[in-house]
Amino acid sequence: MTEVHAHKRKIPLWSSDGPWIWLLPVIILLVIYSVYPFIFNVIISFHRFDPMEKAFRWNFPDNWINLFTNSDFLKAFRITLTYGAIALIVELVLGIAIALAFDRSRVKLRGLWQSLFILPMVVPPVIAGLMFRFLQNADYGIISNILYALGVIERSEPLIGGTGRNVLLAILIADIWQWTPFVALIVLAGLKALPHEPLEAAIVDGANRWQLFWEVKLPLLRSVLAVVILFRIVDLLRLFDYVAIMTSGGPGGNSETISHYAYRMHKSIEWGMVSVIGIVVLILAIVVTNVYMRAFKVKF
Amino acid sequence: MAVTQLPATGVAQAQTKQAERVARARHRRETIVQTSIAAFIALIFFLPIVYWFLVSVKPLPYTMTWPPVILSEPIFDWYEVVVLGMDPNIGAKTGIVFNGAAGDYYVIPSLVNSILIGVLSTIIAIAIATPAAYALSRFHFKRRSSLIAWILSTRMMPPVVAMFPLFWLYTQADQRVFSSIFGRGTSVLYDSLLGVLLVHVVINLPLSTLLLKSFFDDIPTDLDEAAMVDGCTRWQAFSKVVWHYALPGMAAAAILAFITSWNEFLLTLTVTRTQFRTVPVFGSTFDVSAAGTEWGALAAVSTTAMVPVFIFVLIVQRNLVRGLTMGAIKG
Image: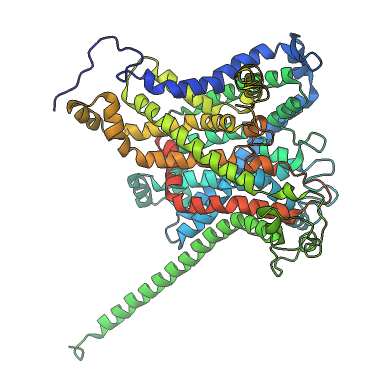
């Protein structure tokens, strides 16, 4: 075989011997989707849209001051983080437990159970929202009635409605139903890909099942879990669909998330505010993912 | 010879038989226990869908009571309204009088849109992402790793960041640029097929590109080099030889892209008004907090929208799982 050496010469940008022409469409489209919105948001965040004049008026720093003194936004911020943390922990623990259950050696008809289990993932969140709206109806919803019977919630404070004390639970149930299979599937694939030697060595050393999981499997799954958690964090920060369909942020703003708050601002033509929120959300996402990737040393 | 057999061996045999029986019984018990647990989990996640489907074949009074009538003689009136777009005032059987007009629950147009947009945007996204992924895998240039990090960061970006800028770009481009070219009131981007497609292509590019890059990384470079020794240019080496080996990766990426497009809501809601509604946008037009919610019609809408994708997913399940786990296992 003759080695093909790229000589040290200037490759023109449009030549297929260099990378840029190959990457051009992706770069252009992603610039439209991420770089342009960022610059646009920064500029617009110093303005207020005047519906009468149909123009943007400079009003720095009003939007920024508004946002951070606005109790609605601060509440939405807090709800997004609270909700995200709870959903993440529950989905992770449940997902790992389910993956372990599916990974047992004597499960018959595994393919069938796995197929049924995958389906929630491909129900559009909006449709899932309609479904849970029905299942969680205060009077005749099956989930509501089960929870009443178990004494988890009171009839006077239903899942959706009342003072909104339990509304986060309503959204959590939908999210957990939809996304636990995703976590479980990836962890299951990770379990199947585990090397045999450490497991066998541990069994020879007389490790019981619990030790096998905690001390052997979990450390080996670390990189898989790191990626799953990252994807879930990113999705939970953007939560919008269930809120829009099931609760519209109510009652009393108790299920308002950042994305939904921004959408409401967009609807009421407070476009300066939408841009400020856009930047804040972007910074939040960058900080969270960076801290996370450093802490877990996630690499792609 | 049986006659001269020592009794001791008989005892030993009996003992091993006994041990085998015990082992078999234990195995059977394990099979039953483990299978029941897996089945129970699967059914817990699947039953809500079944329960919701049943609402679509029952008269309304049967669903709006507690305890509900789980099974009744099926009626298909809801499907006549939803799939055939018939006049919903069938009152007598379904037990309600509709608040809406005939077209309100007619899901077929948005379903056609969803499938059309899903398929087209998937094809475009994969067609753009495959060469890009090839370049990221094969060329070693300055800034390569920062470019990959940037592509990944766009996948991490919450869509709400792009919501208003895209809305503004679309509406302004239509008003100021395209109107002067094609005449007043044209919508080239806002509430048009092109505009929705653009959004759906863009949201799928980052993941498709990175997924395909890891597939190309697994394809030996000898292939490209052999083709180039035989006189192919870089482009020909890719277009005639190498991309065929990435087909499984393209399939996995395409399935993920289609599902993402199928579920996308916020951006599509922002850039469409009435023309190019997808199923999620159509589903969001119903006020489910109202007292007279037609659950049967909504369940029929949901079922009609879910069944095609369920069939699709069950066919491509192996590829889907592979695509999902690709990044995670290699990470």
